[in-house]
Amino acid sequence: MGNQVRKKLIGWTVAIATPLVGGVIYYFILLFLYLPSEDLYNFPVPRNAELIKENEVAKSYDWSTASEENGIPFGYE
Image: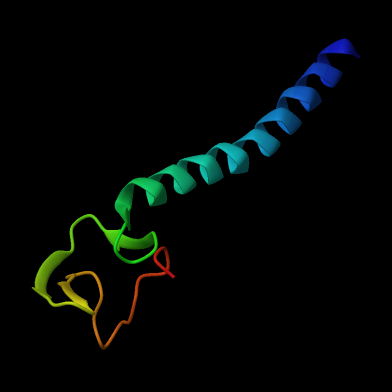
């Protein structure tokens, strides 16, 4: 009887820990993909976006992940 309780406890622990660990990993991956822009009130700018034009009021970036057909990636939204 003690062995069955241990198996259930291990099963529940794994079932609860897996989504939590996955969520933490996903969150930290998203944090490292974007940098807060000081000029844009900490608005996230993708690390691999290339600044193509800048003036006094705006900055234009080229980011290959975003497109008109597919829009903005889910993680950035």
